[in-house]
Structures are given as C-alpha cells and as structure tokens.
Amino acid sequence: MDVEELLNSIDLSKITDLKDVVFRDLLHIEKVKMDEVEPLKAEIESFVNAARTGVDPVVTGERGVRAMRAAMMITEKIRAHSWGEA
Image (cartoon, rainbow, N blue to C red; front, side):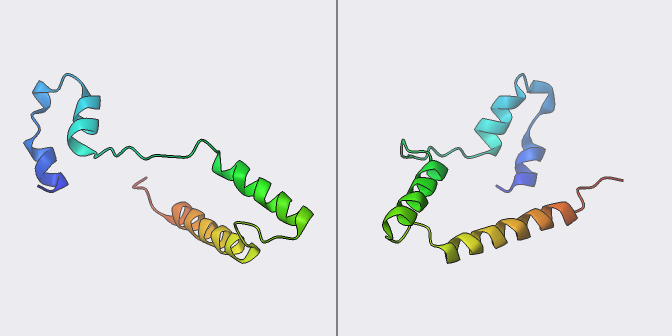
C-alpha cells in the first residue's frame, strides 16, 4: 500500500493519538546499533593523533573536502527549494 492509499484508509474521526498513527502506521522505525564513542570526537582525536605522530587519519583531507562539498550542495538545495510558501 502506498502512502496516499494509507492516508485515505485512515478514519480521522477515530484517531485518538496522532503519534500512534504517524509512528505505528506511517513510519518504519529501525533501531540502529551505535558505538559508545561520539563520531565527531573520534574523528577529531584521529586528526590530532595523525598530526602528532604522522600516521594517516581515519578521514583523509580529500574525503573531508568531499564531505564538506556534499554538505554545502545539500544546504544550497534546501535553501533554494520552494516549500510551498505563497
């Protein structure tokens, strides 16, 4: 069933809790296992270690630049998008 069919099948008069409709019926929630380490902190620690010892960092400068370019492109697309405001 696609989203439109699902929305059309919901009887709004019987909804007592919108949260249940959204999080039970419309969204699939998947638990993701994550390390205890905060990712940005680990990345910075790796960079500092690389600067001190001369070993390669986990994230190379090239990958960092590519990630920043991608983030900037996404941000620009979000800013340029028309969100239906009149």
